[in-house]
Image (cartoon, rainbow, N blue to C red; front, side, top):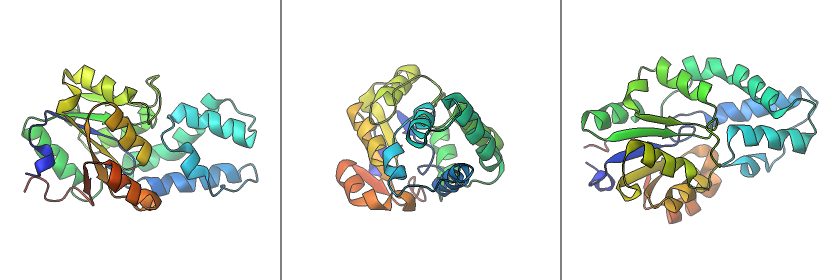
Length: 218
């Protein structure tokens, strides 16, 4: 068993880019969505929205691109564009499903802590048959501040009944790593090609760093 798991009671996971190969899909959705208005994706968009909740991202899009729809309507459009992908096409990172099942078997408490929308998180978990692995699922729909604020991780620990120091966070972006650290937890950075521009900072901030989940239990 990897040393980072020793002594931990709970494992808290971001979802997109951390457990799932989904960030590329969101880049395509941004392209297709803005294309409806004759707009292109700005080069800095990915950096500007990192860590924002699903709703706050919709607010950002409305304000930056002067869109006619309300943020709630924008979110509904995105959910409609993404739901089929989350339910049937997006894949786990290598070893991810096996790692979750083994962690549950070994008595770890598991939580999803994603800023994405609940319908998309639930669609993925249900379709892959792993919803029961998670005692807590927190999403961007739960009225918590986005990352790097520690709210989502502190709330997960509270709902699990576990001290933050006994939690290990898995995150693929800098604001997420910062959120876990601010919650008083150890953090494992997860490699992802869509945050490759942050890799050096991710490695510097997080106590641990993995390419995937293969072999973490030996």
